[in-house]
Image (cartoon, one colour):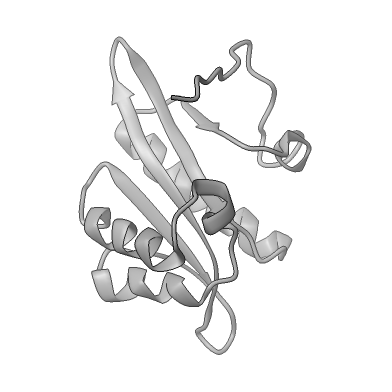
Length: 136
């Protein structure tokens, strides 16, 4: 089952999901969940949860609205933790696409360390742009 997470109590369930946020963002899992709880009611944020048959959260995705014509027309997937169930992943992506279309976006972007996971799935393709970073 796929569900948009709006209430802080729903978002707090992310604490039980097996993800790599501590490694990826260098913060404790509790800090990550506190951050998500603090932004979940922001209309520019879209958090979708993936639940199993027993209503346990097994995955989630965090997206941000960057639609601001003429500068940007995209929604960006900031983080996703997938249970590996293709059907659930497809439903989760469809809910993000629906939200993005409602905002007037014509593009969804994503940052990933493993592009091979996304390329060819969910209609993702390589962009002409590359993300560069500077460590401070």
